[in-house]
Image 1 (cartoon, helix red, strand yellow):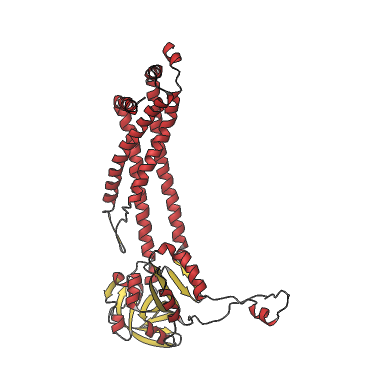
Image 2 (cartoon, rainbow, N blue to C red):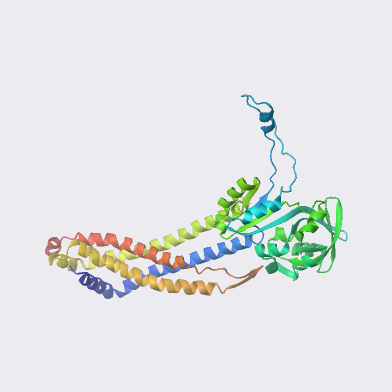
Length: 413
């Protein structure tokens, strides 16, 4: 039997039941549009929070991790087959500085996956202004390189971050520190690292919207940080690395650990709670979307079942005139596909416009101006594919039922 005849019959059945066809297509449309909207919202918020975490966290951080005492000295001193046991092992005191840090940086730069590398000196300090004291964390950096990696300029509230290289005793402080110590650009602040206090001038104030960071963190020139902690110009506590593709960070971190001999912490390890939240949100949203598409599938199934019940004599006549079971399946499957295509096209348009409208909703919280939405084209392809699969699956069982109609029994009966 020619395919166009099957298509004509399928289209005729759909056209004769316009209301039911519209309802079924609306179910598919709603499912696909919600799929696109939910996925756009999820990816948009995930991208925003990932970008926000990268405003303070490098893709990979290399540092000297405190180590617990082991038996390697005993093994080297007593080279016998006995088992050496260390009772109540303690952490071994060691310098936080990296050995030959600039040689390591030169080696890291040779990797084509690396986009940026910068050294830094971290130290716990005490900020003092008048009689008010505040504990915090000072970071010595090359501020130009730091801006390339973490967009320091975009976080500036007052002042120019480049003044850190122009003013010998300059310091950039978080907004929380500025508020608690009543400081403004141009004011002096006493910074104590170890036993030696230094008077420094505030050249800028930044706000990352991460309260813990804004309440404790400050930037100084790396040479100033080395002087404050009483170290020479080769002293570096951390090397921060950014990759062209941050998704490769976990694998690359393990490679850098072997190459450098130091701990290499990737951004996934540093943000395990954030990644867990992403996975939980994905499960919840995909469950909701799955239920919506399932409901749409049941709607199509019921409509085709009703069509078979009402058209049972016509189906019997078709089979009596030579239509095979496969041809009958084709007729009803095509109905399901037509419903799916109509719903998919309208769902794509509705999903895009809904996403566009929601992306213009003003939030105005911290550095988040508008609700983050993603216009990621694979979501639209996936939405259509899932919608068509749902409609075909929902249409197959009624179509199979129709193909088994016995024309003799129906006509007699």
